[in-house]
Length: 383
Ligand SMILES: *Cc1c(COP(=O)(O)O)cnc(C)c1O
Image (cartoon, protein in one colour):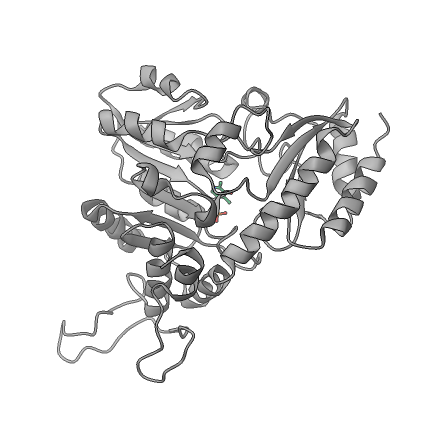
């Protein structure tokens, strides 16, 4: 099956008892056992639930993986991978990371004796000097957030394999439509399904997809033992969202391409961050590993102070000023005061997350309306 067909059918067949075409919401915590231990594959919904199973199988198919696990949030999924570590272990990760991941690594796992190295993955060889006998994992986010850098998954996977390191890719910004890290050698793909997979800003969920059976069993143990698993309503919503993933992603990419063209030579724009920029160092990598350039774009406003940038962010009428991304509606975000506020200023500046940076999640509205709104919002700033 090809992508859109899998999105609609994988893991899902008509309900055997009623013939219902859509996977029912199995709103149940427990399951009948004919005799103790003799059940029909389900015992208790923290561990497994039929609506969730359908979603997990669909997610696995979309990433060309064998196993999928759905979590109650993206952070829940990330947390499960970190729980594979033991005190003294070390992790190499990017210096341009989702704020919540940075917070979890530095304010939670660092206290359990895990050491994190925040490294620039632009040249994958940069990570080699950080590898030692305690190194266990590589955690890479691509495209990154909010400066949309694209890192070479295949090259990092080669290094991970050579040193026997577990390699996870946070592929949230790409969605399974734009890239499939397992095909490029990653061990685990992580998604915040809250974003493009759900696609309608109405659910919080995370996912892990992998091929290795032992890894799946270890992660399933953590998932069931700690219980950050989603309820059936949420699984239904994501299963439903996924059915239009291909259509939505194409529209996101097309609208973003047009937004990029309108900002490229704009006199008030200092720096544009979008993987499809020809002169961009990431363009070649993006061409190689992604199907298109995605629905996210960031830019800095030339000479704008923190206050002036916040004024522009507040002036949007159609782009909603809000955290998050990947829904059908367009959003604008000021990373420094919103999504990346938990990262210290020195770290932020190093990663290009400056006071005058705005990030757009370009939705699938009519492009003319989006361009008009962008124009009027930038109009409130007088250079
Ligand atoms: C949102 C997000 C997360 C966290 O996911 P939640 O569903 O909010 O817990 C992790 N990584 C990236 C890149 C994200 O955008």
